[in-house]
Each structure stands twice: as C-alpha cells, then as structure tokens.
Image (cartoon, rainbow, N blue to C red):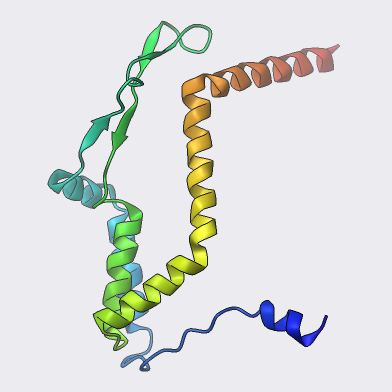
Length: 164
C-alpha cells in the first residue's frame, strides 16, 4: 500500500483543549447519568413531562392482523411515540455536555466537535434509519407475520421428520 493510500485511511484526529481536572470523574458521572436515564422510574418521570403520541394518518388501525397470526382479528395501532426526553440518546447527549464542559470545552467548542462527529457518522446514521424503516415496513405490510408462519412451519416439519 502506498503512502497516499495510507493517508486516506487515517481516522480524523480530535484534539482535547484541556486535560481532565480529576481523571475519571467526568466519565463516571456521565456513565452514572446514562445508567439512571435507563431506569423505568426515571423514564416514566421524563415521559410525564413530554412524550406525545402521534397516530400515523392513513395507517393507524388500517392494518388488521388475522388468524393464524393472532387468536382473533385485531387492528394494528400505528402510533409514533415521540419520547424525545426519555430516549437513551437524550441522556447520552446531556452526559456528553456535562463531560465536555468538565473537560474545559466551551459551548462553541462542543458544537464544533458535535458537527465534526455528525459529518463523520452521517452514512452510519442513514443506514440505521433505513434499517428502522425496513423494520416498520415489514411489520405493517405483513411480511413479518408471513415469515414467522413460514419459519414455524419449517421448524415443525423438520422436528416431525426427525422423529421418524
């Protein structure tokens, strides 16, 4: 591999403005905040402040699950739960703000680093969003139920043929 090719594979470098005032302190406080954010009681408290549930027009209650997927016919709810405050990412973001300020970054410095990071992971975020979209599409199109029934039949036929 040539030196030019090696240069293109190097990860971007982020330089810290200052050293930690107390090594490990900011990391442990951030980890503690992230842990607390995941507790069901804290999530319920935060959802009490703001967690709107938005029905998806032309989809909510329009898809009906029928036997043999479910015991009796039931309409599938399509409701977007916008729990932005209790979401794990919000806790991580607040923890990173606390840690960044503790390391001596200014708000402008933090914004620059966040922007650089967003540019770096933009394709990963797009891929994750696309995978979530595929998951919802397979759910509301009935593909998940069809595949589930097919795999269940395959497993049951494999077990019955293994007994012979």
